[in-house]
Every structure is written in structure tokens, then in C-alpha cells.
Length: 189
Image 1 (cartoon, rainbow, N blue to C red):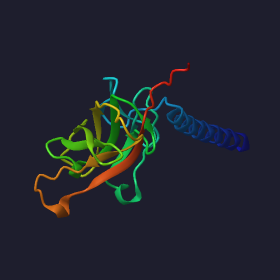
Image 2 (cartoon, rainbow, N blue to C red; image 1 turned 45 degrees about the vertical axis):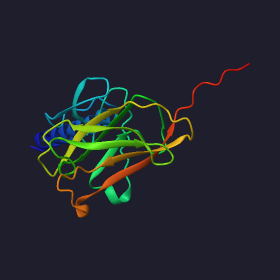
Image 3 (cartoon, one colour; image 1 turned 180 degrees about the horizontal axis):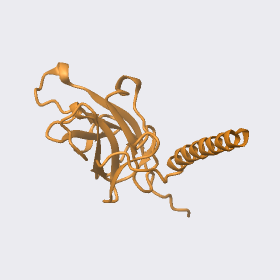
């Protein structure tokens, strides 16, 4: 009888160790990029490929796009910008990737503006939702702005504006980040 209990105990211990090992291995593979899909939702990456929510936090992960979610404290629960990061050096065309609450959109888009150092608009367009925008959850978005580098000044501002079809100022909101324009190569004489 003691031998039988010993065998049962050993089987239970080995089973528990196996389950713990599998759980740890699944978590590690998600961190390393071999993550399981979390939802069927998809977004379109700047390179045109469609991807689903992946990773340990079920973020949208585009190939060759570093997943760094940035926002300011005031907008942390409203909009996340994955690309570009604040203070990034940018060039044209500028790919913009992130996710925002569905309330940030109207008709599946919201305005995106790029200004020079003096606040002059040098490019504008719309970020398009990569999923159902009629929700209060986060919805992925992408946008591309084409611009000519300003002749003067290296600093600019990227503005992601909450779409406000009512026009009422109390519904206005925007995330603004500082960006730097790519310098052309200097010819060595």
C-alpha cells in the first residue's frame, strides 16, 4: 500500500512540474516573439501586412516595428503611440502606428498633423482604424504622412487630434509629441 501511495505521489509531482514548465515556456515564447494570437482582430502594418494582437500584453506587433508604446500621462488611458517615439528623428514618408480608444475616432478615422518648429502645418492626413472603432476599447490605427523637410529648423510636432464632429471645444483633445527632421547627408569636400 505504501508503494502505491508513493507512486501516486510521484506521478502527481511530475505532472505538476510538467504543467509549471509548460506555463513558463509559453510565457517565455510570448516574450521572445513566438506568441499565440490573442484575438482575431487585425491591423495593417506600414509595410502592408496584416497582423493580429500578439505578445504577452496582446499588443499589435508589426514585423520590423519596435513595440514601444508611448504617450503622455494625461492621455495614457486614451491613446498609445507605437511609432514614432517622442523625440524621434523622422523622414518622409512618416509611418504612424498605435492604438486609441474608439471614442477618439469618428467614422473610423481621426486627424493627424505634422508642423514645423513654428507651428506651420507641413503635412496632414487621417489615421485609419484597423478594427471596429465603435467601442470604448483600444482600436489599432495607422497613418502615413508625406512631407518636405522644412528649410529652417530641425524640430517639429506630430499632433494626433481626437476627431470632434460636434465642434464643441469641450470635446477637443490631442496628443502632441516633439519630433526631429532627418538631416540630409553633408557632402565632404
